[in-house]
Structure formats: C-alpha cells, structure tokens
Amino acid sequence: MTAVADAGASLGVSGEGAGATTVDVVIVGAGPAGIAAAVRAAESRRRVVVLDEAPNVGGQIWRHRSRDTLGAEARLWIDRLSRTNAEVRRGVAVVDVVVGGDDAPIVVVAERHRGGAEVIRASALVIATGARERFVPFPGWTLPGVMGIGGAQALLKQGATFRGKRVVIAGTGPLILPVAASLTDAGARVLLVAEQAPFQAVRDFAISLLTQPDTLLQAALYRLAFLRTPYAMGTWVTSASGTDRLAAVTVANARSTWSLPCDVLCTGYGLVPNIEMPRFLGCATADGAAVVDERQATTVPRVFAAGEVTGVGGVTLAIVEGEIAGAAAAGVARVDPSLVRRRHALRAVARRMDRTFAVRPEIRSLARGDTIICRCEDVRCAAIASLSGSRQAKLYTRAGMGACQGRVCGPALELLFGWQSGTVRSPLEPARLSTLSTAALAGAAASTDTLHSSGS
Amino acid sequence: MSTRLPSGSGWVTVSADGRPVRVPAGVTVAAALTDLGVAAFRRSVSGEPRGPLCGMGTCYECRVTIDGVAHRRACLVLVSDGMQVTTAAATQESP
Picture: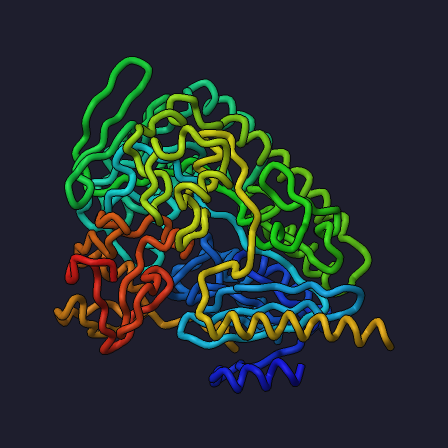
C-alpha cells in the first residue's frame, strides 16, 4: 500500500483522495443497484467506497440536478445512503481492476475526470455498471440531432429543455413511452412515437403486465397522460437526413413510407448490459450478461454483480439484486428469502419483454454500404460487411478501436452480423498516461501482496 | 457527506466558442450547449459534425474542449462560472 501511495505522489497525483484507500467493499456504479449494495454493505458495518463517472449519484434512471426532481423511491434510497458512512466518489472512471489470488486485496484504479488517479483496495468488489443503449445503424444516424431515448432523457435530467423542438421517437419497448412524456412535459413537440413491434405483441405484453404489478406499468400510465401524440405500432424509422444537423426522417410501416421534418430523433432499441468489467476479470457471461449465483456472486471469487449488468430487468430488480449483492459482499451468509422471491418474479417479466420487443429483420438491414457503423473511426458498412468477425474488422478497418472502445458499434455488429465483441483489455476507459502508470504499479503491488500472503 | 445534492439554483456565465452566455447552474455542458442550439460538438475523423448520442459518457460523441483540455465529455461535466467551452462549430476541426 505504501508503495502505491508513494508512487502516486511521485507521479504528481495530488489532492483529496490521492494514493490508496483501503476498504472492505468497493462498488463500481452509483445507480440503483450500486446504491442498494452500498446501503446494505455499509449497514452491515463495512467500510464502503462507491465509484461513479457521473457528477451526481443515481445512475441513469435516478439522474437528477436537484433533490426536488427525484421520485419518492429514489429519494428514499439516496437519503438512506447518505445516512451511512459509505463514501461516494463521483466523476471518476475505473480504468483497471486487479483481483489477486487468495486473500490479496482487490485493487481498483480510477481516473478523476479533472485529472489524477486514485487507487482503492478492497476485500470484495460489486460491479453495478448498469446498461447502455443499443444503437442500430441506419442511413443518417450520425447526424447531430439523432440520439438515443436514454440520451434525450439524460440531457433532460442534465437540464436541457428541448423547448419547441420537433421530436420523433422511434424504437421498441416500454422505455420509449416515458421519454415521450418527459419531452412533452419539458416543452418539446413530440410528432410521432413509432413502436416497431406489431400491435398484437404490444397488446399481449400489456395484458400480461396486468397480472404482474411492476414499475413497467408506469409506462402505460404515462402513455395515458399524452394521448395527443400519435403512437404507431408496427412502425419504424428507415433513415434520417440533413446537412449539418437532422432535418427530416423517413418513416415506414408494412404498407407505406413517408417523410417527416423534425429537429430531434430519439431511437431506443433496447439496452445492452455493460459487461466490459466482468469480462475483463474473466467472469463467466451468458447472453450478453454477467452470470451470477443466488448471492449475486460472479464466477470469480469475491467479485459480485448486480443490476442491469446481470441482464436488463429494470430499476426494481436492480435494487433487489443490489441489496443481495451488498449483503453478500459484506459477508452476510444468509440471503433474504423475500428478496430472492422478488428477484425471481421480476426476471420473468424481463424475459417476456425481451421476446415481445425483439428488433424486426427490416431494421437490422437498414444500413447501406456508405452507412457509418463505427462512429469513432468512421468505418462504413461496405468496409466491414465482407469480413469474418469483430476481430478482423478491428484489425483491417479500426472498427471498435476508437474512444468508445466498441461500446456503440460492438452491439451493432452483433445485431447486424451476429459477431461477438472481442476481448476486453485494460484500460477499461481512455486514460491519461500518469493514470496508466499508477495502474501498472497497483498491479505490481497486488502481485507482491499475493506473494506476501502466500508466504505468511 | 459526498452524496449531498446540488441546489440547482442560480446562474453562471460560461464562454461558448468565445461568446459569453448565462446558463443555469447545475446543468451539464452538453445540456447547456443543446439548449443554445449547438449541433456540432465535435468533428469526426472524416470531418462529419457530431453531437450527443448517449448522454451518459459511453459514446464519446459530445467531446469538446473545456478550459483548454480537449476531449472532455460534455455530458459528464457541470458548467461553472468562467468556464471556457470550445466546440467544433468554432474550429471546423476536431476539438
């Protein structure tokens, strides 16, 4: 530990939190799952540090500018967290994690957005990295003004108003309804909500929810609040056009195609679990999510995962999983049976939702030869389509090698060509050289600890 | 306690591409630029204009130069008084 702290100082890492902090549980992600895990672990008298990239706690769904704008449940959990002595470090990105053998500490290296690195050493790690949006490439999707529904929701929560903007929302699943309502409330003019799933599928899913009280029902309630906006099922956007920014979209259904001028297009084709960290650590994954047991333990000892990273299931499931993971990471042996029952029921709803809102084949084939697939490196579809997989695409075209490290084009390539993403390497996020030096030293220190502990 | 919430009240003045603008305190740079009508936050490697896509720090499309530091994700940075923000709209090049 001393070695790492000294190294940090010599690299010019200074200010609050520089050097190493030793805790019992380190949690990556301060969304609902991370918060619930932190609360449970801290209430079990464990020292806890929570790390998050964002300037405020809450993750994407509980993102907020002021406490007044938070919903009741979010406020309850964030207040409960603030009553513990869990320390939340915001505006930091985790770039490296070392899980040593036996009892050696888990070492997490993070970079502050303002500059400088921090090193956290812990006995257990909870990965609560959440999910990101799945983007489907189509002609014009790189134009400014085209964004994810989560992107629009995030910008709203960050303080954007979209006042007077003409908005088209296109995608699938219950998440497109609340964003339509939020945008309308903020002052945007929502011209169309296009749900790609056919009417029968949406109806059957809605009926199935009636026997399963859940937050997803809120989406249906939101829907009632804004009946003025056309909600079209079996309808999708085929292209976007404009010169320097979005000017219009082309909309299609089974019968016809038409053009609709607009300023903003929000697309929402489901969520993708952020499994870079579990994959990097060698945790087993299946169907694009981290595999966990009934205590939310991954296949790597002392590493737990909770929330969307274990499979997209919504905020209520994330909280339940976070509670279980936090208690387990704190060493509480018994799993609360009521939490296990709720987890089981909520996962069943999530599976049903996946089937209902599967992306239709017409949308998977919208990209043309000149459509950009990798937005970081501007790699077009024609350059990729004849290749054999993600690795070849990376080597030949640089697809997936840019700043986002394939987080956008990786799931797109999987949807378009069925390609699995390549291996995950450190750094997990683009990082400064000084941070990488700290990470290298932390790794060396962790191996030294392993030697010490095996020798003692 | 570090989970304390910001007040979100008041205004700050930032420089957006050299133009002083008053924006609400507590908003992100991405939200402020969006409401100012900025479309091109950055230029891609082949010169295309790009703006926010994911809003949550994943896509890196909203990168701008903040107080002389390039490649900062506008969706992860809150505005502050006197902040200097430079977008692709000003430079015609990747910030």
